[in-house]
Image (cartoon, rainbow, N blue to C red; front, side, top):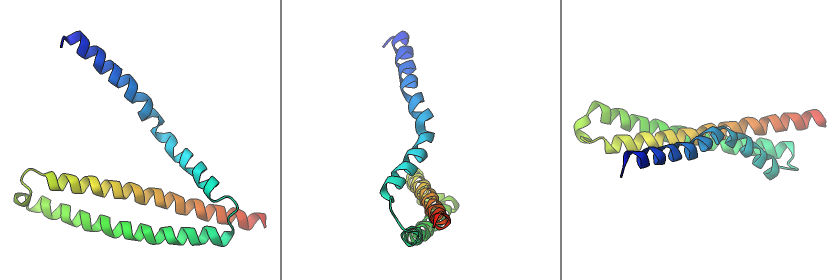
Length: 123
């Protein structure tokens, strides 16, 4: 391939990728609106029960993340068990994914408690 074609293709990839990157922050707003649709008509007790069940899931995710972090630190202390770093890299990726899920659940928990508080104020 000629350098001109490579430059054109790279610019095209950048132009296609930038809008998706810029819109990545909008996901939480869309997610909150989906939560509103799913929970329309819920009582105070329903919101509190949902928050409590999600708190249990957050605790489970937290224990899994701690276990993965312990395995990662063991592999960092003894790199000869993972000479190419594939296992360590995959564990780091899994840990960060679980952290993201945990953060999303924490947002949902806070949202459920806010909805319960608003419902208390309107009664």
